Image 1 (cartoon, rainbow, N blue to C red):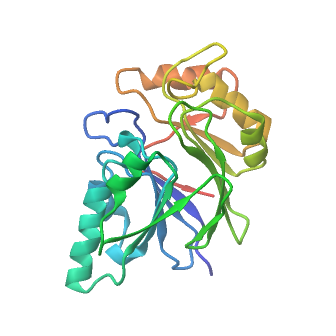
Image 2: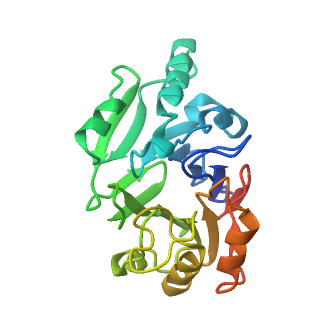
Length: 252
């Protein structure tokens, strides 16, 4: 029987991790031995991979919806892990890395010949990897980036929304997803909500209701802000909202 598709939260913090925590990092597994996709690799994520990957070869690809330092800082370390595994004979080939078309100066930082196979994608592209079909819409944020929908052949679905504001295109992209993860640190309000940082928790709850998501997880937390306060703001609008828990695996 095919294993259940699942998402594992490796890191849930924003610009810097809380003590013992990590920034953006999610492992997406379609089941069936197709390998896992790492979405984001912020500070602290590389050290957590070994707890959740039976072998280095099980990491099929890295997907970077944006190249903000707090969302991609550990790519070098993950590349080093892949290179070490290749030298030991436990991994073959380059580590497939999909990166959003960010400004050239950020793109150049990804180049690591002989280790990473880096492929650029735009919000108009579809990325198919490890049993997932990923589609995108641009994030309404000052830093270039994309929000994504990932779907498996068995109907499992995930929506991942990075910092930014709610748009009609975003609601349409996410329609009916089983699990919606919104990077909702901060409590911005007003017409430009989400443009300077994470979407506010109540806006995240409103987005989940608008797109008909099955479940909502709040991530991208600010270590200096009580997590309970972030959750309370979302629960006031959507009682089933929850905080993303590091190390927890969620069935899709």
